[in-house]
Amino acid sequence: MRKKFIVSIVFLGLVAIFACRKEQKPPARPESTGDKQTKWTIGMSQCNLGEPWRVQMNADIRNAADQHPELRVIFKDAQNDSLRQRAQIEEFVNAGIDLLIVSPKEAAPLTPPVAAAFDKGIPVIVLDRRVLGDKYTCFIGADNKKIGRAAGEWIVERLSGKGRVVELKGLMTSTPGQDRHTGFREGIKGTSIDVIFEADMKWLEPDARREMESALARFKAIDLVYAHNDPGAHGAYLAALASGREKEIIFVGIDALPHEGQVYVRQGILGASFEYPTGGSEAIAVALKILSGESVPKEIVLNSRVFTRENIERGGDWISPKEVEDE
Image 1 (tube, rainbow, N blue to C red):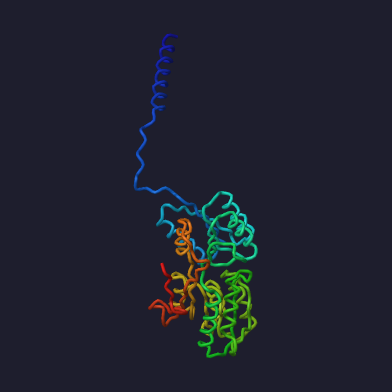
Image 2 (tube, rainbow, N blue to C red):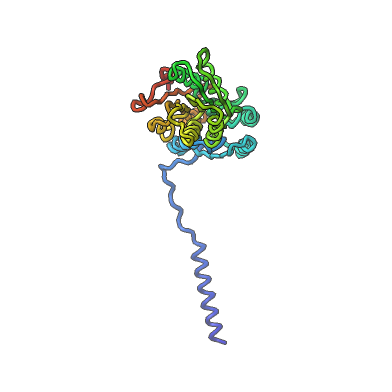
Protein backbone atom coordinates (compact mmCIF):
# COMPACT_ATOMS: atom_id res chain seq x y z
CA MET A 1 0.00 0.00 0.00
CA ARG A 2 2.81 2.35 0.96
CA LYS A 3 4.63 1.42 -2.24
CA LYS A 4 1.59 2.40 -4.33
CA PHE A 5 1.35 5.69 -2.46
CA ILE A 6 4.99 6.55 -3.17
CA VAL A 7 4.56 5.69 -6.85
CA SER A 8 1.51 7.94 -7.05
CA ILE A 9 3.38 10.84 -5.45
CA VAL A 10 6.27 10.47 -7.91
CA PHE A 11 3.87 10.31 -10.86
CA LEU A 12 2.00 13.45 -9.76
CA GLY A 13 5.30 15.25 -9.33
CA LEU A 14 6.40 14.40 -12.84
CA VAL A 15 3.05 15.58 -14.25
CA ALA A 16 3.39 18.89 -12.40
CA ILE A 17 6.93 19.44 -13.72
CA PHE A 18 5.84 18.63 -17.29
CA ALA A 19 2.87 20.98 -17.03
CA CYS A 20 5.05 23.82 -15.79
CA ARG A 21 7.47 23.30 -18.64
CA LYS A 22 4.59 23.20 -21.16
CA GLU A 23 3.21 26.50 -19.88
CA GLN A 24 6.55 28.24 -20.36
CA LYS A 25 6.47 29.88 -23.80
CA PRO A 26 9.65 30.15 -25.81
CA PRO A 27 10.81 33.69 -26.52
CA ALA A 28 9.17 35.15 -29.58
CA ARG A 29 11.28 35.32 -32.74
CA PRO A 30 11.89 38.81 -34.02
CA GLU A 31 10.04 39.45 -37.30
CA SER A 32 12.16 39.72 -40.43
CA THR A 33 12.37 43.35 -41.49
CA GLY A 34 12.69 42.24 -45.09
CA ASP A 35 9.27 40.58 -45.19
CA LYS A 36 6.30 42.58 -46.46
CA GLN A 37 2.85 41.84 -45.15
CA THR A 38 -0.13 41.54 -47.46
CA LYS A 39 -1.58 44.98 -48.00
CA TRP A 40 -4.31 44.36 -50.57
CA THR A 41 -6.50 41.38 -51.47
CA ILE A 42 -7.63 40.91 -55.06
CA GLY A 43 -10.45 38.59 -56.10
CA MET A 44 -10.02 36.98 -59.52
CA SER A 45 -13.24 35.60 -61.02
CA GLN A 46 -12.44 33.30 -63.96
CA CYS A 47 -15.38 32.10 -66.04
CA ASN A 48 -13.84 28.68 -66.66
CA LEU A 49 -10.58 26.78 -66.75
CA GLY A 50 -11.63 24.37 -69.49
CA GLU A 51 -9.72 26.37 -72.11
CA PRO A 52 -5.91 26.41 -72.16
CA TRP A 53 -6.00 30.15 -72.86
CA ARG A 54 -7.81 30.80 -69.56
CA VAL A 55 -5.40 28.59 -67.64
CA GLN A 56 -2.64 30.77 -69.11
CA MET A 57 -4.47 33.93 -68.05
CA ASN A 58 -4.58 32.76 -64.44
CA ALA A 59 -0.92 31.78 -64.63
CA ASP A 60 0.00 35.22 -65.99
CA ILE A 61 -1.92 36.91 -63.17
CA ARG A 62 -0.33 34.67 -60.54
CA ASN A 63 3.19 35.16 -61.90
CA ALA A 64 2.79 38.94 -62.02
CA ALA A 65 1.28 39.09 -58.53
CA ASP A 66 4.07 36.93 -57.11
CA GLN A 67 6.44 39.80 -57.83
CA HIS A 68 4.51 41.97 -55.36
CA PRO A 69 4.32 40.46 -51.84
CA GLU A 70 1.90 43.22 -50.83
CA LEU A 71 -0.71 41.58 -53.06
CA ARG A 72 -2.81 38.52 -52.31
CA VAL A 73 -4.89 37.10 -55.15
CA ILE A 74 -7.77 34.71 -54.52
CA PHE A 75 -8.88 32.74 -57.59
CA LYS A 76 -12.37 31.36 -58.21
CA ASP A 77 -13.39 29.18 -61.17
CA ALA A 78 -17.03 29.51 -62.29
CA GLN A 79 -16.75 26.29 -64.33
CA ASN A 80 -18.54 27.81 -67.32
CA ASP A 81 -21.64 28.68 -65.27
CA SER A 82 -22.85 32.30 -65.23
CA LEU A 83 -24.98 31.78 -62.12
CA ARG A 84 -22.01 30.33 -60.25
CA GLN A 85 -19.84 33.24 -61.38
CA ARG A 86 -22.42 35.75 -60.15
CA ALA A 87 -22.49 34.03 -56.76
CA GLN A 88 -18.71 33.96 -56.56
CA ILE A 89 -18.47 37.69 -57.29
CA GLU A 90 -20.99 38.33 -54.52
CA GLU A 91 -18.85 36.19 -52.19
CA PHE A 92 -15.82 38.32 -53.03
CA VAL A 93 -17.75 41.52 -52.31
CA ASN A 94 -19.07 40.21 -49.00
CA ALA A 95 -15.55 39.14 -48.02
CA GLY A 96 -14.36 42.73 -48.38
CA ILE A 97 -11.79 42.39 -51.17
CA ASP A 98 -9.89 45.51 -52.18
CA LEU A 99 -10.22 45.00 -55.95
CA LEU A 100 -12.04 42.65 -58.32
CA ILE A 101 -10.69 41.23 -61.58
CA VAL A 102 -13.35 39.45 -63.61
CA SER A 103 -13.33 37.66 -66.94
CA PRO A 104 -17.06 37.16 -67.54
CA LYS A 105 -18.59 34.11 -69.15
CA GLU A 106 -21.39 36.21 -70.66
CA ALA A 107 -22.00 39.94 -70.78
CA ALA A 108 -25.64 40.32 -69.70
CA PRO A 109 -25.77 37.92 -66.71
CA LEU A 110 -22.53 39.28 -65.24
CA THR A 111 -23.35 42.97 -65.63
CA PRO A 112 -25.48 43.29 -62.42
CA PRO A 113 -22.97 41.75 -59.95
CA VAL A 114 -20.08 43.69 -61.51
CA ALA A 115 -22.09 46.92 -61.29
CA ALA A 116 -23.05 46.13 -57.68
CA ALA A 117 -19.38 45.68 -56.74
CA PHE A 118 -18.47 48.93 -58.49
CA ASP A 119 -21.32 50.81 -56.76
CA LYS A 120 -20.01 49.62 -53.39
CA GLY A 121 -16.69 51.30 -54.09
CA ILE A 122 -14.72 48.21 -55.11
CA PRO A 123 -12.52 48.90 -58.16
CA VAL A 124 -13.30 46.46 -60.97
CA ILE A 125 -11.00 45.40 -63.81
CA VAL A 126 -12.95 43.61 -66.57
CA LEU A 127 -10.59 41.33 -68.45
CA ASP A 128 -11.03 39.88 -71.95
CA ARG A 129 -14.83 39.80 -72.18
CA ARG A 130 -16.94 42.89 -71.70
CA VAL A 131 -19.98 43.55 -69.57
CA LEU A 132 -22.80 45.90 -70.53
CA GLY A 133 -22.71 49.54 -69.51
CA ASP A 134 -19.80 51.39 -67.94
CA LYS A 135 -19.90 50.42 -64.27
CA TYR A 136 -16.34 49.18 -64.03
CA THR A 137 -12.99 50.86 -63.46
CA CYS A 138 -11.00 49.56 -66.42
CA PHE A 139 -11.47 47.14 -69.30
CA ILE A 140 -8.39 45.32 -70.63
CA GLY A 141 -8.49 43.24 -73.78
CA ALA A 142 -7.52 42.98 -77.41
CA ASP A 143 -9.79 44.21 -80.19
CA ASN A 144 -11.65 41.05 -81.15
CA LYS A 145 -13.38 42.70 -84.07
CA LYS A 146 -10.05 43.83 -85.50
CA ILE A 147 -8.62 40.33 -85.01
CA GLY A 148 -11.63 38.78 -86.74
CA ARG A 149 -11.33 41.26 -89.60
CA ALA A 150 -7.61 40.53 -89.96
CA ALA A 151 -8.39 36.81 -90.06
CA GLY A 152 -11.00 37.40 -92.77
CA GLU A 153 -8.58 39.48 -94.84
CA TRP A 154 -5.85 36.83 -94.47
CA ILE A 155 -8.31 34.15 -95.58
CA VAL A 156 -9.34 36.20 -98.62
CA GLU A 157 -5.69 36.55 -99.63
CA ARG A 158 -4.89 32.89 -98.98
CA LEU A 159 -7.86 31.67 -101.02
CA SER A 160 -7.44 34.32 -103.72
CA GLY A 161 -10.88 35.72 -102.92
CA LYS A 162 -12.85 32.54 -103.59
CA GLY A 163 -13.57 29.44 -101.52
CA ARG A 164 -15.85 27.38 -99.27
CA VAL A 165 -15.36 28.12 -95.57
CA VAL A 166 -16.58 26.61 -92.30
CA GLU A 167 -16.91 29.01 -89.37
CA LEU A 168 -16.74 27.46 -85.90
CA LYS A 169 -17.83 30.18 -83.52
CA GLY A 170 -17.02 30.78 -79.90
CA LEU A 171 -19.81 31.20 -77.39
CA MET A 172 -22.08 33.66 -79.19
CA THR A 173 -23.54 35.06 -75.97
CA SER A 174 -20.03 36.35 -75.19
CA THR A 175 -18.66 39.56 -76.69
CA PRO A 176 -15.45 37.99 -78.12
CA GLY A 177 -17.50 35.43 -80.04
CA GLN A 178 -19.77 38.14 -81.42
CA ASP A 179 -16.87 40.42 -82.36
CA ARG A 180 -14.74 37.69 -83.94
CA HIS A 181 -17.74 36.75 -86.07
CA THR A 182 -18.63 40.33 -87.06
CA GLY A 183 -15.02 41.25 -87.83
CA PHE A 184 -14.55 38.13 -89.95
CA ARG A 185 -17.67 38.87 -91.98
CA GLU A 186 -16.41 42.41 -92.55
CA GLY A 187 -13.06 41.01 -93.70
CA ILE A 188 -14.59 38.78 -96.38
CA LYS A 189 -17.31 41.20 -97.48
CA GLY A 190 -17.46 41.77 -101.21
CA THR A 191 -15.50 38.63 -102.06
CA SER A 192 -16.51 35.21 -103.35
CA ILE A 193 -15.79 33.54 -100.00
CA ASP A 194 -18.83 31.39 -99.20
CA VAL A 195 -19.47 30.37 -95.58
CA ILE A 196 -21.15 27.03 -96.21
CA PHE A 197 -21.42 25.91 -92.58
CA GLU A 198 -21.34 27.69 -89.21
CA ALA A 199 -21.90 26.48 -85.66
CA ASP A 200 -21.39 27.63 -82.09
CA MET A 201 -18.76 25.33 -80.55
CA LYS A 202 -18.68 27.36 -77.29
CA TRP A 203 -14.85 27.61 -77.35
CA LEU A 204 -14.54 23.85 -76.66
CA GLU A 205 -12.40 21.48 -78.73
CA PRO A 206 -14.70 18.43 -78.38
CA ASP A 207 -17.69 20.52 -79.53
CA ALA A 208 -15.67 21.85 -82.47
CA ARG A 209 -14.69 18.35 -83.50
CA ARG A 210 -18.30 17.20 -83.36
CA GLU A 211 -19.52 20.17 -85.42
CA MET A 212 -16.75 19.62 -87.97
CA GLU A 213 -17.78 16.00 -88.33
CA SER A 214 -21.24 17.26 -89.31
CA ALA A 215 -19.75 19.69 -91.83
CA LEU A 216 -17.59 16.97 -93.36
CA ALA A 217 -20.60 14.68 -93.69
CA ARG A 218 -22.61 17.37 -95.47
CA PHE A 219 -20.00 18.90 -97.78
CA LYS A 220 -17.61 17.07 -100.08
CA ALA A 221 -15.51 20.20 -100.67
CA ILE A 222 -14.27 22.46 -97.85
CA ASP A 223 -11.35 24.80 -98.48
CA LEU A 224 -10.80 26.33 -95.06
CA VAL A 225 -11.98 26.30 -91.45
CA TYR A 226 -12.03 29.55 -89.47
CA ALA A 227 -12.36 28.79 -85.75
CA HIS A 228 -12.73 31.46 -83.10
CA ASN A 229 -9.97 29.86 -81.01
CA ASP A 230 -7.10 27.43 -81.54
CA PRO A 231 -8.69 24.52 -79.63
CA GLY A 232 -11.64 24.84 -82.01
CA ALA A 233 -9.33 24.81 -85.04
CA HIS A 234 -7.46 21.80 -83.63
CA GLY A 235 -10.72 19.94 -82.99
CA ALA A 236 -11.73 20.57 -86.59
CA TYR A 237 -8.34 19.31 -87.77
CA LEU A 238 -8.74 16.09 -85.78
CA ALA A 239 -12.15 15.50 -87.35
CA ALA A 240 -10.69 16.03 -90.82
CA LEU A 241 -7.72 13.80 -89.99
CA ALA A 242 -10.06 10.98 -88.94
CA SER A 243 -11.84 11.23 -92.29
CA GLY A 244 -8.62 11.50 -94.30
CA ARG A 245 -9.38 15.02 -95.53
CA GLU A 246 -6.96 17.11 -93.44
CA LYS A 247 -4.58 17.81 -96.33
CA GLU A 248 -7.26 19.43 -98.49
CA ILE A 249 -8.34 21.95 -95.82
CA ILE A 250 -6.59 25.00 -94.30
CA PHE A 251 -7.22 25.62 -90.59
CA VAL A 252 -7.12 29.07 -88.99
CA GLY A 253 -7.51 29.84 -85.28
CA ILE A 254 -7.16 32.56 -82.68
CA ASP A 255 -5.13 32.69 -79.40
CA ALA A 256 -1.57 31.81 -80.52
CA LEU A 257 -0.38 30.61 -77.13
CA PRO A 258 3.33 29.68 -77.33
CA HIS A 259 2.63 26.10 -76.21
CA GLU A 260 -0.53 25.64 -78.28
CA GLY A 261 -1.44 27.71 -81.35
CA GLN A 262 2.15 28.58 -82.23
CA VAL A 263 3.10 24.90 -81.92
CA TYR A 264 0.25 23.96 -84.27
CA VAL A 265 1.55 26.49 -86.81
CA ARG A 266 5.07 25.07 -86.58
CA GLN A 267 3.70 21.56 -87.05
CA GLY A 268 1.76 22.62 -90.12
CA ILE A 269 -1.62 21.87 -88.51
CA LEU A 270 -2.74 25.51 -88.64
CA GLY A 271 -2.17 27.80 -91.57
CA ALA A 272 -2.36 30.79 -89.25
CA SER A 273 -3.04 31.65 -85.62
CA PHE A 274 -3.95 35.15 -84.53
CA GLU A 275 -2.67 36.22 -81.13
CA TYR A 276 -5.11 37.06 -78.37
CA PRO A 277 -3.03 38.20 -75.36
CA THR A 278 -4.42 37.18 -71.95
CA GLY A 279 -3.90 40.58 -70.32
CA GLY A 280 -2.99 38.87 -67.05
CA SER A 281 0.22 40.74 -66.33
CA GLU A 282 -1.35 44.00 -67.51
CA ALA A 283 -4.25 43.49 -65.09
CA ILE A 284 -1.88 43.26 -62.11
CA ALA A 285 0.03 46.37 -63.27
CA VAL A 286 -3.24 48.31 -63.54
CA ALA A 287 -4.47 46.93 -60.20
CA LEU A 288 -1.35 48.24 -58.46
CA LYS A 289 -1.91 51.69 -59.93
CA ILE A 290 -5.56 51.73 -58.85
CA LEU A 291 -4.79 50.53 -55.33
CA SER A 292 -2.05 53.15 -55.04
CA GLY A 293 -4.52 55.89 -55.88
CA GLU A 294 -3.37 56.52 -59.44
CA SER A 295 -5.77 57.12 -62.30
CA VAL A 296 -5.97 54.58 -65.13
CA PRO A 297 -7.58 54.60 -68.59
CA LYS A 298 -11.15 53.37 -68.87
CA GLU A 299 -10.04 50.99 -71.61
CA ILE A 300 -6.69 49.44 -72.52
CA VAL A 301 -6.51 47.76 -75.93
CA LEU A 302 -3.80 45.10 -76.29
CA ASN A 303 -1.91 44.56 -79.53
CA SER A 304 -2.05 41.35 -81.56
CA ARG A 305 0.12 39.44 -84.02
CA VAL A 306 -0.51 36.82 -86.68
CA PHE A 307 1.69 33.71 -86.80
CA THR A 308 2.23 31.69 -89.98
CA ARG A 309 4.87 29.20 -91.12
CA GLU A 310 6.57 32.05 -92.96
CA ASN A 311 6.92 34.45 -90.02
CA ILE A 312 6.79 32.43 -86.82
CA GLU A 313 10.55 32.18 -86.40
CA ARG A 314 10.82 35.97 -86.34
CA GLY A 315 8.01 36.34 -83.81
CA GLY A 316 5.02 36.85 -86.08
CA ASP A 317 3.76 40.07 -87.67
CA TRP A 318 1.76 42.76 -85.90
CA ILE A 319 -1.77 43.12 -87.18
CA SER A 320 -1.24 46.88 -86.99
CA PRO A 321 1.82 48.91 -85.98
CA LYS A 322 2.54 48.35 -82.30
CA GLU A 323 1.59 51.32 -80.19
CA VAL A 324 3.80 51.89 -77.19
CA GLU A 325 1.77 53.05 -74.21
CA ASP A 326 3.27 55.89 -72.22
CA GLU A 327 4.33 54.73 -68.80
